[in-house]
Amino acid sequence: MHTDLVAALDIGGTKIAGALVDGQGGILVRAQRATPAQEDGDTVMGAVEEVLRELTASPLWSRARALGIGSAGPVDASAGTVSPVNVPGWRGYPLVERVRAATGDLPVELIGDGVAITAAEHWQGAARGHDNALCMVVSTGVGGGLVLNGQLHPGPTGNAGHIGHISVDIDGDPCPCGSRGCVERIASGPNIARRALENGWQPGPDGDTSAAAVAAAARAGDAVALASFERAAQALAAGIAATATLVEIDIAVIGGGVGKAGDVLFAPLRAALKDYATLSFVQRLTVTPAQMGTDAGLVGSAAAALARRPSVTSA
Image (tube, rainbow, N blue to C red; front, side, top):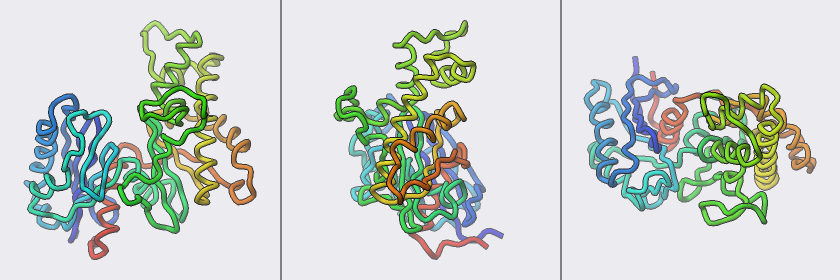
């Protein structure tokens, strides 16, 4: 029998998912709406409130003792606000305040979506048992989070571990964040596809120009597609090695759509890592695919709420 539970929200540019989660990471109730990402801020919040209404209608809601939110960022956990790049109607939006109002002042823990996925992988996935880990999402963007000394390390604003905006090419292309040569500018799915197209890769008869299509071409031996993934792998390796050198992680977990490319990504990444992770204390660093799948954001948001509410347990 489940006793105390936590609620979780996973908010991104495509979907808003919610769940009631037990102390073992099991999802007992779930709800989801599409994100009206191009609408005004209150319309987006309306979709969040619809998800919350569905959760609060469950008989299990009375057992929820806290709520964790993993949101596309940047987020500011100290202020309780979010400014997702892909949701222009939310800039400094008081999400925590609005969620508390919709849930009867339930305690709320806000973290970035990369940190949420890190919490999930450390709790139940590929980073389980590792005290010092970097977990990454390589997809439309590149995000991440850290586990240090066995504890999730979101940082003061909930954005620590945001490896996508480490610069690995100081003379590289401008990044939308304002810097140059960021990991995201080189290794994200759209940039893998952009680089392949710019260098002469031709999509198939279906016209698919996504990173997944580039990965398929690479698996078939297309030299340009392979080169685009190798460049992405090099950028990821440089960012991972820099992080490992700074904080002594021993594992890097990679999820997201690009992470599903398999050996097309992981083989050149592991090879490149040998060129960047050269100091003795990082030479044993391993890189592995994520395990948690599409529920990682919800499970990780719940984990963050559980970590802040040590009395929340499951029987």
